[in-house]
Amino acid sequence: GQQLNQSPQSMFIQEGEDVSMNCTSSSIFNTWLWYKQDPGEGPVLLIALYKAGELTSNGRLTAQFGITRKDSFLNISASIPSDVGIYFCAGPLKDSNYQLIWGAGTKLIIKP
Amino acid sequence: GAGVSQSPRYKVTKRGQDVALRCDPISGHVSLYWYRQALGQGPEFLTYFNYEAQQDKSGLPNDRFSAERPEGSISTLTIQRTEQRDSAMYRCASSLSEKLFFGSGTQLSVL
Image (tube, rainbow over all chains, first blue to last red; front, side, top):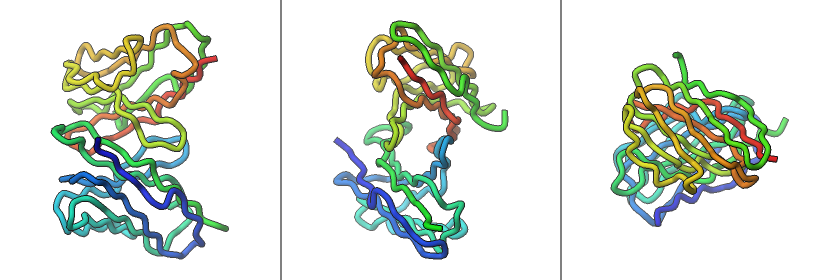
């Protein structure tokens, strides 16, 4: 079935560094969504991508919809302490316009 | 309301008891979802409502789980005869599109 694989599973970085993470699948997706989850809270949508090759920014965050439609990338520039959290990719289940499948998340930890 | 509200925030119950988890979605959002999230994992779909109609309940683990949204707004997820394996974070989300807005969840612990 459809699965989303996120990597890395976790990242330890210094404040100010750039961050890159990705999400891949063996299936084609028509929409890619990137969410961030802070401790104790629900996921919050960061960026939505709808077209292969699309590059979209939200402040210091930039996400790309891969050309093959089987992957997506999220980059964070000049990380700050509040970037800490878990980043999830998600995409619609095939033949569904409402059910999402989710990656397992990339946990971002910033070293003091 | 301003966001999706869930109650209680924490629920501790004994095995075999029934529990009811409440979700108050964002006003005007016709779609409502229930998810379950294990530690270190992404949300797992349970069920979906469009207005008051339960369109999909394929993610409910077994018949001890049920959900309703009688007036197309507030929803209740009920777990009967709880078991320890039911312990998890239960999250509700509402939307007008594919962009989901999540509540803070109910952390259920079954002893």
